[in-house]
Image 1 (cartoon, one colour):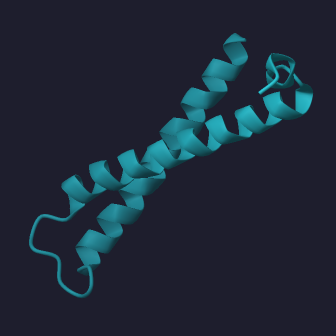
Image 2: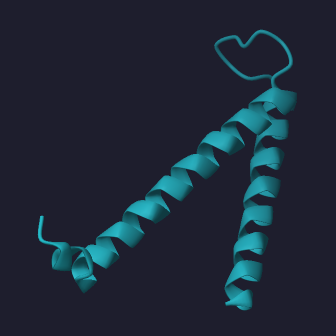
Length: 78
């Protein structure tokens, strides 16, 4: 591959998009692990109990709210 191609605007845009996808995937995986461990205390059946569903929803929302807050803080530092 031509080294100058790595610094082209299109390539940089592609790399940034892939980084964002990787960060999103990592965040979803962490969210899943944290909330699952916190909310699903028994052996899962074919459906979540109402308390598990409520806990998972609240946990996911709090996690996303904190992630957005952290991202905004980092953006304001730049």
